[in-house]
Image (cartoon, rainbow, N blue to C red; front, side, top):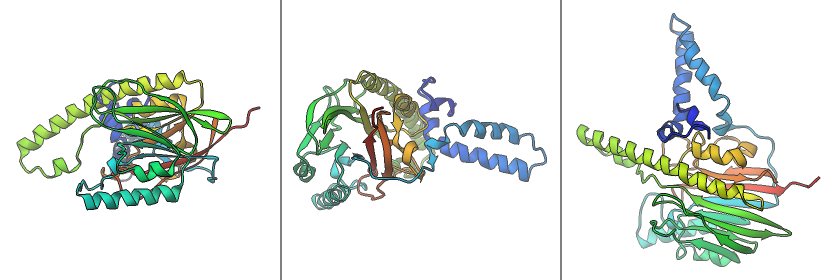
Length: 330
């Protein structure tokens, strides 16, 4: 089920949970294969897990990848859930927020991207970045939604912008048309439905009945969230498909690379990690295993030159960076 949930033709909300934990399931099956081949007398049982592992090879490059040498492209992009510039440890006093904001300012200045797609942006705390970039636009929240501000910040002129109404209360998106030299690029900054999950919640529960109640509640929240993700990414990709310009789709997908959300985007666009990523990367460090929930996808109009994740624990997400170059027309 987890494997099937990794494809856009299989649209069942419950597979979202399996998709999030598919790397763990892969390792478990690998251990089973080794156990049955090395220790168990009956070797035939290894065929079942071996077959599952063989199927998983098809989608393994979404999790681990070895690319050719990286170069610097003409256009450098960052996608970053900045968590309102507040510390990742959920400390909200003024002094700690000031420190976190300064750390983000230094990181952005050091990376010096051409375009930044922010999720959970805050204009007050982000004013230094807005001052440094001549063009920027933000979307505080869609009508009737809770605030999850998104923004697009650019060195190049933003000539128009709009958004797409989607289902759910904790999602947002912003679409900006940016004139890059003689070309126009359509840039998406998206934040799919937040699952409102605090990793420390279950760890602090000692009572068995309370743990059962919280686990059940978590399951229902996750399945509802993944159902909303499917509706949201479908609406976003319909907008991508009708774009008259090359597309750069950035954002916090709130699910991993083995999900319907990822597959739906990757059907039409190139995943910059699969093109130029190296090794296993993690973009959300509050889960105890590598989870790539922040993505940069681009049209095949672009050649992907580089990909990296900035491993600085400022927000609860790591910034993701890619550089691209327009392909030469034949």
